[in-house]
Image 1: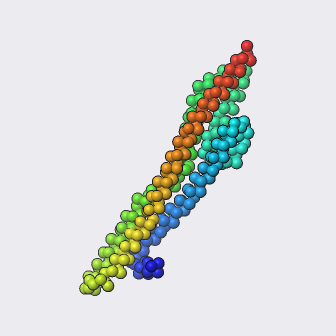
Image 2: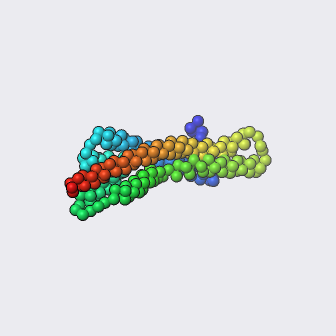
Image 3: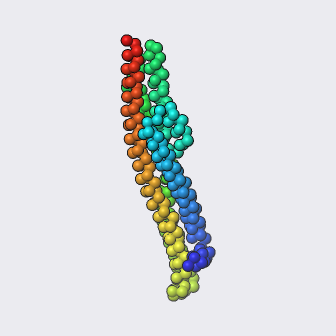
Length: 235
């Protein structure tokens, strides 16, 4: 069967060959994206699992910040680092003599920073996914174009030969249908994995939003605690 398909491709017309070559390029690029995206999301999940384990162990934030340097693929680490920098800045200002920081101003700033961080992480994970969507949407039509063109060529040959028996028609039709099969072969995996990755990214987004809310609550508690300590010391 494999040799027969190869023979069909070799005997196909120039346009059909160009169509098949285009579909092969789409397919190769799609599978490359699928492989790298799969690895990227797998590493993100693994690093996130390790980081969240450390986070809920109650490690000191300074130590957790250092530990997180070894977990570069986790989107939670990026959010935590933004939180840690803002918390450290607030504590320094709150400890300064004569300073009177307003916790709500810093909370609003942190919320904006975390939202921007979530958006940045989502963009990172969604990068190259549009190509899978494009492949899934266009390759069936490219394949169909190749099939229609191949069938037109078959009928043109029939007209030139003046014969329309099965032996004359079948080879040309078979060659043309290979283009449709190639288009579907490129499109189906692209659509399946596009939907799979999109769902995984949405799950990560929900987890990041939940973690972001948790960080904001921690910031509020620690910020108010620092202000209260300063007020007590000033009495």
